[in-house]
Length: 153
Image (cartoon, rainbow, N blue to C red; front, side, top):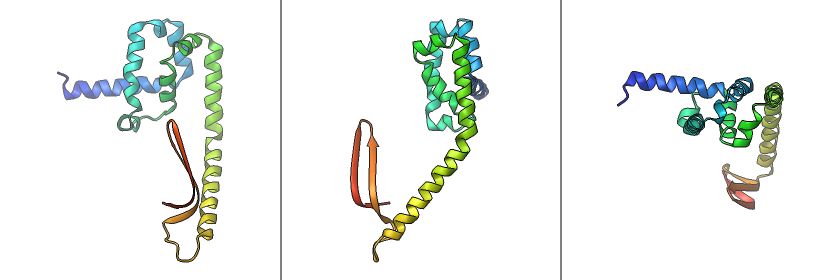
């Protein structure tokens, strides 16, 4: 049975390791040294998928690590990481994302706010405040349900 201190140490170690997976150069290092071909290590990566659960993911500072952890489940991706050019490409894509993320997010938030204001102006007199006119699309994999008209918020 694991003591509280051992559980805390394991949690911290696994948290740190999972976050290291966000670094493509570290992934390249692991691949070049053969870790990504070893069955025990691959099993460990599979075990670490529990970090995708919200109660664990909230502790992560680098969410890209979860995407990398997911990709590491695929043999083809693990093999490609041996190539330094692959790691460099991933690194460049991450940098581009970080450079443009704030601007894109601000634009999306502004567009959403403008859309909501326009919908509120279109509501007929006497319509409840929590009802809006518009088109709603729900996606429940693999179904997509669409409806137009009044919807409850």
